[in-house]
View: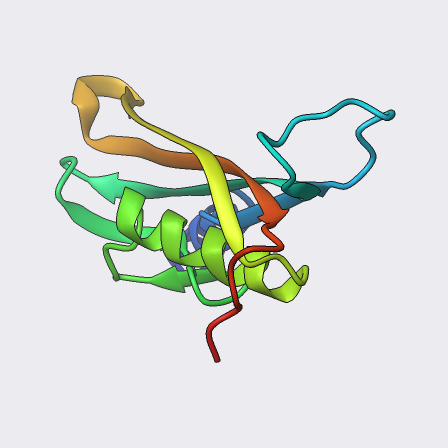
Length: 139
């Protein structure tokens, strides 16, 4: 019985170590390169990555928390482009920009372990946060 309890605890710790997590990376140094069209001023390039582990592809076990950077949630299906875009635009607003350009997204999934019981799913979104002097920021 003790060995079973230890095995369950080790499995739980393993899932926490391999846990889904949201990652937001921001680059603000453009080395004097013009990455924004017209008279827009580039503020930041933002990349958001949401990922998690699912049972039989559809049942979420551990996945990214789209409302908190570097956090995870249990048993919630949060790995999708909608949540990644929400986190990207929230981050862009925090940089002082009033527009996001060149928005791109990608999703992927991979069966892990034997018989594709556990699946790793990933959603990434990136874009440029810019300040458009002709556009007023919404409140």
